[in-house]
Image 1 (cartoon, rainbow, N blue to C red):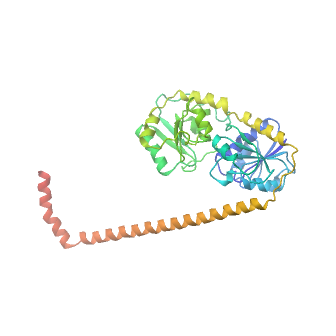
Image 2 (tube, helix red, strand yellow):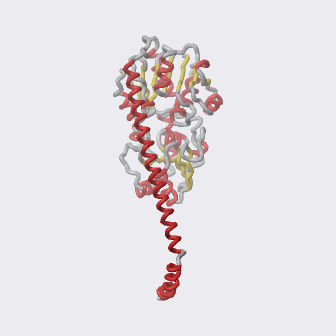
Image 3 (cartoon, rainbow, N blue to C red):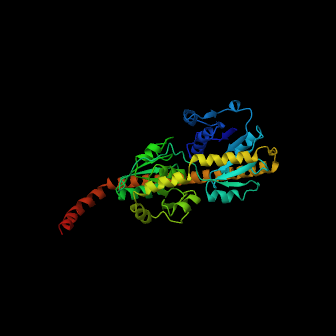
Length: 384
């Protein structure tokens, strides 16, 4: 089959981009012709081409026809619907943003792929009548392979992810410091963003993160601790894995709070042996080849179905309403930010004014005389 895999922002090195870079080579391995398309490919295009993936960054580079389209956002879904009558499979990577939802148009999306139960539950409530296919997150087990044993007592921790910052990061880094664990961070909110995090994972005794980063750590044979901006679920173990996997390793499966004492107690329970167990769990449930075989079966099941409709005024109205609300909310946040900056400037002005007044008092003759009088009394109190 000739398959087109599309995403609006390939340049963003996050979970959705990594997903495409994982499934594309496996589809090619099965003999399918694959093109990855993104109008915003950035430097990721070079990474994909180095892996032998055909990349198109302009509509003129797209194939004349294709047998199936895999999309991850409504923009690419609608744009390519106007070009191809091929069935579209929509891969949803979350429940928070509308960009993770397919267009609500009849017969456009032939299947929605969800990689955890939280996303699958939302997908089943969409207005469109499209089957929801629950698959597990695929991991490239050749790139993320076993990296040898870890220390019996943890020495190095890797914070892996794009969303850990501020107070949440301070909690986990303070705990690591208290336990004598050296930590480094890889991701958007650090000084290091890498396309190939396997080496960084391999140099650590444990990995702290969420989502795909947890599975990548498991595939490398590392103890994995679920902690991120969304929540904290702690260590992945054979007992916790089923529950955490169903929730997508988001940190919200067990209802724990990011309490420093709780996090310290859980991190202190580190067991080096869980790394090998995690490695076997990743191989048993998250091979990329199993995942793409299910995708191919879905495309073949829908081959030859009637052409979809992509001209619904109702869907256009829904999108416009959402855009209006987003613009209104952005304006409200901008106003809140402006007010906060004004309050900060006023507080800084008052602080400077108070400092100036103190300097005036401290430089006066009365102040110097008072200090001279008090100096013997201070010395007497010190002797007592």
